[in-house]
Amino acid sequence: MSLGVSVVPMKTCSYSCVYCQLGRTVYHSIARKVYCKPFEVLKVVSEALDKYVGRVDYITFVGDGEPTLYALLGKAQRLIEVQGWAKTALISNASLIWRRDVMNDAMGFDFVSLKLDAPTEGIFRAINKPHEALRLSRIVEGLEEFSRDFTGFLAIEIMLVKNINCLEHVADLFAEILRRIEFSKIYLNTPIRPTSEKWVERPRMRDLAQFVARFSKYVSRARIEVLPLEEDIDEVISSASSIEHLLEIAKLHPLPLDKVYAKMVELLGEENARSYLETVLRSGKVVIVKYCGKEFIKAF
Ligand code: SF4
Image 1 (cartoon, helix red, strand yellow):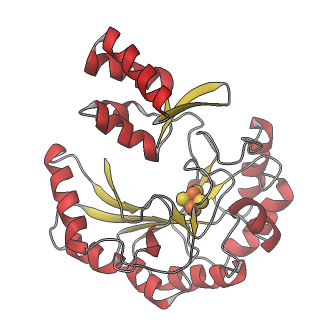
Image 2 (cartoon, helix red, strand yellow; image 1 turned 120 degrees about the horizontal axis):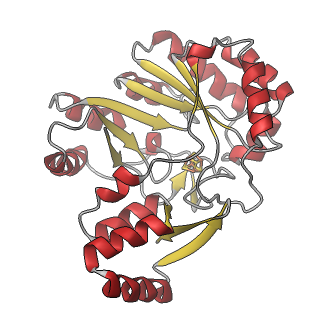
């Protein structure tokens, strides 16, 4: 399993993706800052590892936004790497990969996942709503350079949104860019949790299949993975050791209401679970949102 450590606070990001599960970006920034000290990251990871002894394969750096905005990312990664607990992974939106310092920091990880949702500047602006100083061409140059020197596993992640980038002719445009990048695998994803913009929709199955078929003309099928359309969230929810822990998870990750409620019953008993849920809903600490016909809990 992978243990996630968040190094950037809610919600600081260089993008404001239309499908973001964290809502619209509050702090739209490309400035790298010191949000915490590396030894504080080490402490949090060390404490979390106590709960999952022997079960963690990767310690993954993520943000409640974009993790490369953390100026001491490389130092924190090295500090964890030398402990020998597990491999390290970085999940980034790639927006700053053209910067030498960000490239150097990312180089130290065993696994790096970089987002590339758009093959043109227009689609980039429509889907990722980037900080005004960012340009897709510069990011692609950075991806190209990073991929040449990186020796770990490089994943490219593409989020496919109905009528924006999940179109056959867009697959051709992606292929032109991806020819320049030496990646290990491409993950094709679709928005499976509530999105920041209400109009966002998951692609129709037919469109997704056509996109994958077209894409496979350029990239071998073995190097393409279409991520599941349903999320297996049970392990995440069952890992919650208290009601507070459960709501902490729901701050970063909207959770299906039925599964959260079942966990609340397990932790508090049937009667207390119902009144607890009513109380937190009234207080505005959580809200219920509908997406794709399902109800999710989001916490704040
Ligand atoms: S999806 Fe990721 S990159 Fe996009 S706005 Fe949300 S946190 Fe930022």
